[in-house]
Image 1 (cartoon, helix red, strand yellow):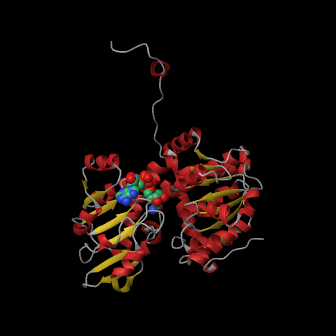
Image 2: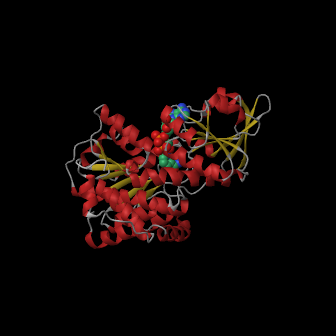
Image 3: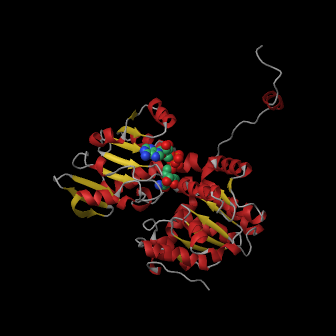
Length: 418
Ligand code: NAI
């Protein structure tokens, strides 16, 4: 018997159409689904997932169910759940606990319902599920054989747990697969962050000064796409190598304090805390727009913004105006939560096809390899390469193969200058 808590089950039909649309653009995951259906590698496995409840996640859940698993799902962010999708999944018999606009208390209530389900494998995006299991719900540890983690921030948290010796089960860092971060973090976040900003504001990007805080995989993609829309991109960084890369990629690089007074739009993608603070906001122009695309809503200091503001009003969905003491207005998008998911639909299905194919294959790997040490593991190279090959195949793109002579040449040292 399935149990669930969603906003409105009546939205299920709408959700089904969206899931069908996503599935059309996820050929690799569909192929895995087909194999799972006949081989049932996950037969009887209880999976607990804490992921953004989007149409692409629904395709992943369907794949796991096709493999024989039973799934309980909650959202990995209080603002990212698409209510139609949650309804469609509940209607299909999945135990879903998610709705858009959860309070912090409700958010953890949902996580605890997934833990009540006694998962054997966990899928996490940001490590809130794993950290809850390791702190207030240690009772669940005895059932779990392993887990996967979807994002950079989650992997960092899990590595911190492993360093401290408190991580109690093995986790595969799906984020760190090439077929994940090179495409999802870069092109997915790049495109969908712009999408989120435009849906909330409908402003023109051409000619604007667009400040990207953090030139990691997400920042690189965002800077590239903002430039493509005609914005003048400024990058802020703390890492000299990344800063240098941004300079050579043709962007202006400067400290946030300097960028603060000239930027029109500011987007944080660092995974770090308090990157934009009160002292920076006080330097900003009237009309400056602030958004975040990093995992947690800690990158823009909301306490600082509230402290220096005299009033706040909602202009429209995902767009709030904060008035400072001197009358300047600062606009915050999506309450500082990840703007691409809260104000748009998250990454396009084509990139989630690769991220979630890694997820599905890593779950299968965990199921087939019980007894792994409690550490953070890289995605096995064979899985990463298989996802890339299948993706290329689905795009009808062929590549060369090395000749025997080339293989021998690359594995020898004898021949040099000729
Ligand atoms: P990354 O580690 O590749 O890049 C982060 C960059 O931020 C690094 O270059 C670091 O030096 C820089 N940084 C750190 N503190 C800074 C500061 N105070 N000022 C300026 N730069 C600073 O990480 P990645 O993969 O780009 O992820 C960034 C964040 O985005 C993470 O929280 C991750 O979980 C999240 N993420 C969000 C997605 C979305 O859908 N919105 C998708 C994928 C990741």
